[in-house]
Image 1 (cartoon, one colour):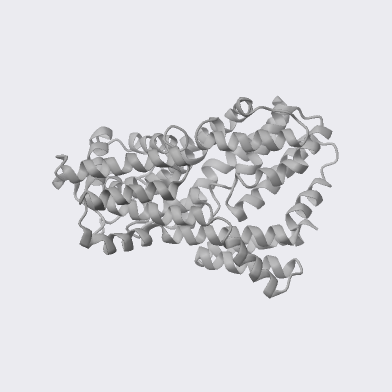
Image 2 (cartoon, helix red, strand yellow):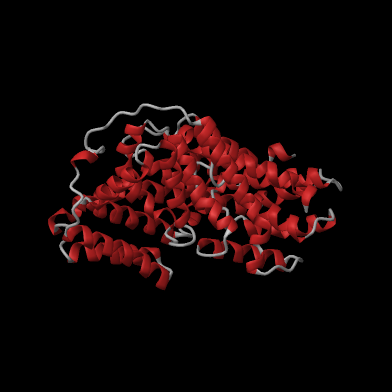
Length: 434
């Protein structure tokens, strides 16, 4: 039965633990053990798979730690405070303008300047004082960041979008429906509109009311006292940031880019050599936890993969569909939601779903448009909303810099409502239009 499938049980355990405020990292370990034991593995094999999985993507973990160090270094120069002042003047006390401006900046991080979540620890903490003054509900900002981190790569085939659309086109073509990389956007752009509608609803309706936050000493900086004159160290911080982006684009290595940025900051003496240990410690505290969660998430994914439960879940779910297109779309979205909520990855979910979804859509009489949209929707739904996704972990790291933003209730739940629900509804209705 579907309800006794190890994937379903493990994801439910993970989510329940997170909602009970059990640490996300510990929740992942416990859920992994549950998944292994329920699927018939012994504890030694389960932990062996979990640990092996943790080592499958060390580059991402190292990148997050180094980016945290770079963010702390840049922030130490004060240039992020100057940027916060500029943004505060730009929005001129307008709460809605501020939230949508954050969403606009976040969109750049996926396509135009593909740094993904790297900008968050640099930009967001200095802006907390602006949010406090405007009494902005940070849940609205979390939704804005979630939108900007996901909608562009789903709809635009450049930057991270180019990678995602390439994965979609390759897997859909290999499983029986030919589609080019630059054709994918023609069928995924409605998902972007659905997410935009969800963002507008969240900002204008759900989280429109003012919310009070305290100005925490040591975190909040009085922007009225910030000297906005650009000095040598500020220019070097900008050079380091641009160099990080440039090296990443040239070498496709984010860790190398961050290392170059750090080297520029210290070798040019924009930051004192004697402050290196302290700043690096701050950077590790800022992003190190995310790095460990991403490693543990990979371990959890491998346990699920080795259990064989993912394929069983998909196949057993599809058995209920019969020839009903709408039921088929609903089941496909539900299965995708369960998988992505547990693994936190949309890119890695595409191959898992395409193998069975392409033939099924063909049997149900769905064309290329509906198939592409369904697979894209099913692989991305849950990304904003999953407690183990970098799309939620990074916004929490920035918005919780002063300890006043809860990961589950202030990031995951709001972004799930604003982003995942609109995608789910649209995808279920796509057989009507395609």
